[in-house]
Length: 396
Image 1 (cartoon, rainbow, N blue to C red):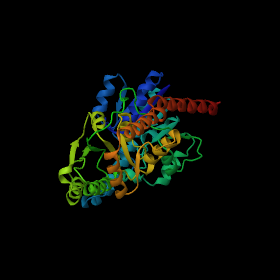
Image 2: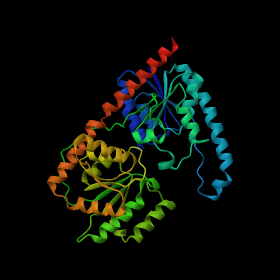
Image 3: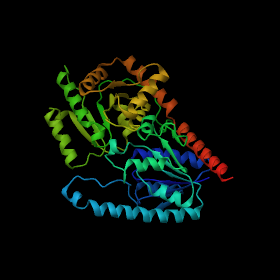
Image 4: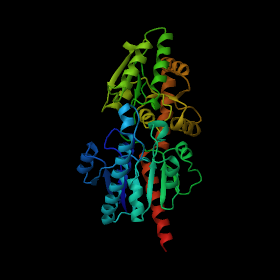
C-alpha cells in the first residue's frame, strides 16, 4: 500500500506533526510505503531523511484567507490571496504528476486547511483523506477559501474521506452520519512516559502551549491572580512553557500579568525540549483553552503523573467525559470560569497525597486505554484497508 502524506508544517513540536510521526512509525512497520510531502526544509525534513523516508518538498500555503491584522494586510489582501491560489493550483498539478509516477493508492492530508492533496487526488482518481485536527475558525482564526460550505462539499464528494480527532470536531464539520467519516482519537506514546504517581509537594502550576486567544491565557491569568489574592501563605508559582514571541500578544499578556499583581509569580520558560520532565515536577497542569480540538498536552501530562486542571470545552471536555464514563469518576479537576479556576488551583495545592495519587493514577490508565499510539495507528490502517476495499468493489 502506497500512501502520500501532505503536511502543513515541519515543526517537530507541532501537535499535528507529533500525531503524524506516531502514525508513520506504525504504518511503515505494517508495510505501508510512505511519501511525505512538506512545504519547506525544516527540522522534520532532516528527521525523515535520517529514517530513509521518501520525502518531497513542494511550496504551498493553507487554503484560507490571509489574516488582516495591520493596515498593510488590508492593502495587500487581494494580491496575497491571488498569489496563494496560484501557488496552490500550480503545486497541486506538480504533486499529481509526481505522485502519479509513484503509483500512490491514497493521499492523506494531515490537516484540514491544506487543499493541494485533495486537488491532486481528484486529478489522479485516487481516494483522499482529510485528517481534521482543528476547528480552523474557532482555534486558529482561519477562514476556509472561498467558504466553509465549499470545504464541507469537498468532504461529501465520492472519493473523499475524513478522520476527525474528536466527536466535537465531527459535529463542527457536520459529518455525523457520513459513512466516509470516522472519529479516531490522537495516539499518545505511552511506553517512555509511564511512571508511578509520586505526590507533588510544593512545585508549581504549569501551562504548556502557544500564545493564542483560543488557548485562554487571559482566563488563566485572571484565575491565577484570584488564587494568589486569596492564598493564606505563599502561592505556588505559575510557569508558562512555549513560544510566546515578542509581539503585541506577548505585551498584552505581560500587561495582564502586571495588572493582576502577579508579576513576580509568573515565569516564562520558553520552548522546552524536556517538557515531560517539567510536567513530572509540576503540581498541576492547567488547560484553560476556549477551543481545543483534542489537546495532546493534557493526556501527555497525565502519563507523566501530573494532575490536570481543565476547562469544560471542546475536545478537553470530551476527554474528561470519556474518562468519567470509563472509570466512573473525574480524571481531572474541572472548571468553567476564572473564579472556579482559582478554586481548583487552591484545591490542587492542598490536595492530600492519597487523593492526588488516586486521581492521577486513574487519569493515566484512561490515557493508556483510550489514546494509545497502538490503537490510533491500527484504527487508521484499518480505515485505509476499508477505503481501498471499497474502491476495488466500485471498480468492478
